[in-house]
Image 1 (cartoon, rainbow, N blue to C red):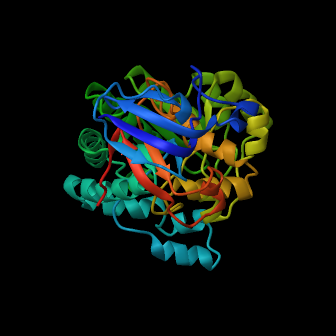
Image 2 (image 1 turned 45 degrees about the vertical axis):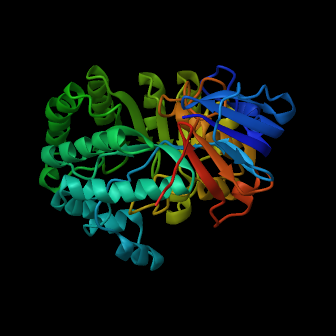
Image 3 (image 1 turned 60 degrees about the horizontal axis):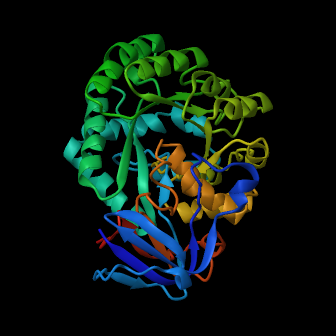
Length: 415
């Protein structure tokens, strides 16, 4: 679609200039243009610059938005979510408020296993319906591209149900949806006595099926004590890679397991969480070109410490921010809220947080050549925000400042 946005107080381009990511000091230069305009043609950015230099629309009758006093930004890219689920875990929220730990809740049959029971009982149609509602709400808050993981089925039938549902949503919804197979999210109860047998089921049956039908772009593993160790993680990710799914890793969240080092060694696209990462792990991510996906909402919600973002940025690692929206450890999909927590608790600057929530998030999904910044030729995924300048996104928290969400040059009418 064609669209012209005029009289913009600030366009924040997050310009990558041909780079896949922004790292180090470059994360503090989000490419702000004052008194600007953006022209979209056929769903892509055709021109961006100062209004004084606008070349015109060539006489065409192009729909317009007058953004006087407002800010235009790239659509947010949420590169890590578990948003296809059933039921809720509000009871566990109360248990944590009374001092129970994540592990203690899991040992009582809560945590991931609680959601598994609900997902196994739900139909694909029910799962898609609830996920679609979440997608609509996310787009209202500015997220235009999102990753959705499986991992709440943990049986062949239930994981296929999730894979198919996510894949179908990618064809049906306005948002860009990227699917990730996370069959190795936890060991299901029926395999508790023999976890390696479940690993074999994943490698021998689930992964070949998902790969043959091209149902997921990525394969992920929760590499953590009591879940999947580094050996099992590597076997699963290499099997996924052999069947066309790029590797991602849940790494170093609760304990150090060497997941970051593994991510660098096998060429993972991203390693996420990283609260317990070591200097060797940071070096491995940098040397392997792995995006560090940090999840501020999880650390805030569980109160278990934050990833060392300053050390990651100072080492030259590309950092992305994601919500990890899920029913157990982060019941929030607001990317601006994630940016606020990153600034207040992880000592990121507002510019770094914005880069991490857009361009670098797109890189964590292999999309940064086409998404995540406002540059000529890229997808016209844009936000018009009722704020005086971009830092207010993180500064004025708890409010939704997005007035227009634009996807592929189309102004979305979100119910």
